[in-house]
Image 1 (cartoon, helix red, strand yellow):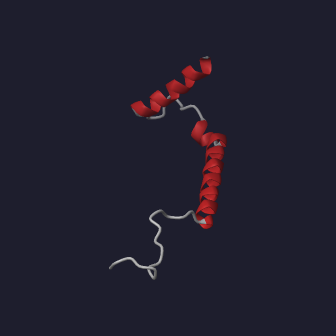
Image 2 (tube, rainbow, N blue to C red):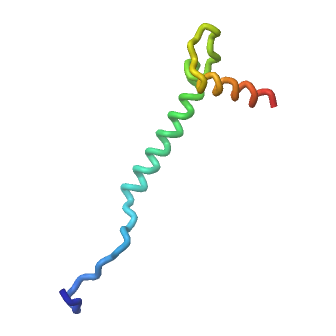
Length: 71
């Protein structure tokens, strides 16, 4: 179809929508709050008991935390 004066202008780039920006701010705020809640949760931040059955990755994570607290 040839272009003429009656053909509407077509944009190839999407335009920002305000509702998407607002949703993005809400998601970021929720993520920040979740991280804050996890930092304050004793179950997630407690040291393991010697009788806990931890795999190598979990043990390494606790060892890394111990080393970073020494400096």
